[in-house]
Image (tube, rainbow, N blue to C red):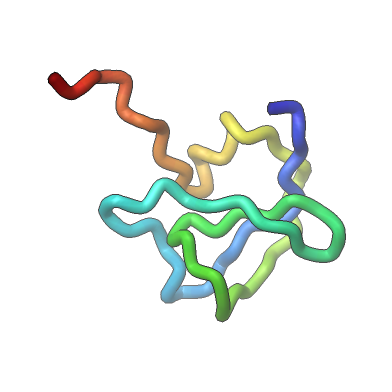
Length: 69
């Protein structure tokens, strides 16, 4: 995905949690990322434009590379 993410949610209650990978949404006509996958209550902070793989520094959890039998 070549999309650039320009906002990251910094709400104290939206920190990464076990089982959540994070979620992309649109805010102010730009892509935005919330590490807790919440739908409401965001505190958006504008960041230098980052790609999806670079979101790991903001809490994105990569999908597991192991397969389940």
